[in-house]
Length: 169
Image (tube, rainbow, N blue to C red; front, side, top):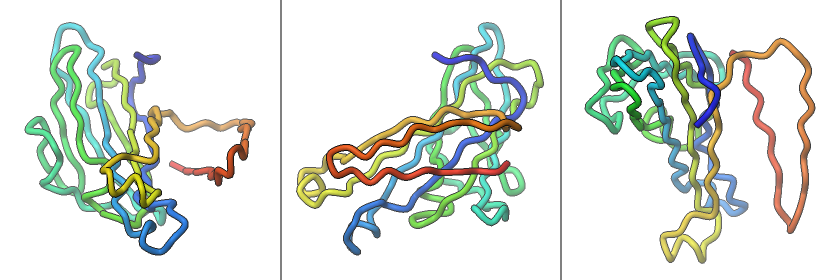
């Protein structure tokens, strides 16, 4: 599945549709956060908090996509069974279309192994929209903050417009 995370990790959310025309930019870009409990023997609790790109907290939504989470304060507390997974909305409901930001996932037990990733879908092509098909989907793994320089390859193939997302937890 992935190298297990422990403690706190981060993921970017982005509900801005990269469509080139005005109508396409208004389209829904579903972002779904998945948390997998890699502990084989017990339930684990996870705290999920979203932040706008400005750093301001996003108020948690009751429409979280699962019965395993409760709204507590500005965030969610989610219970995940052993070797289980949950999927919750990752920004397309709260804060909604046209926003970017950061999701913080924290295991309430510091030694709890888990994997988290965000899957983003979008329709940027009118022809695909008519057929209810996505133009792309991508999965972004949760990461711990890096205090190092990294190199990122960028390619422009087949008239694609590449983009780069930077986040500062």
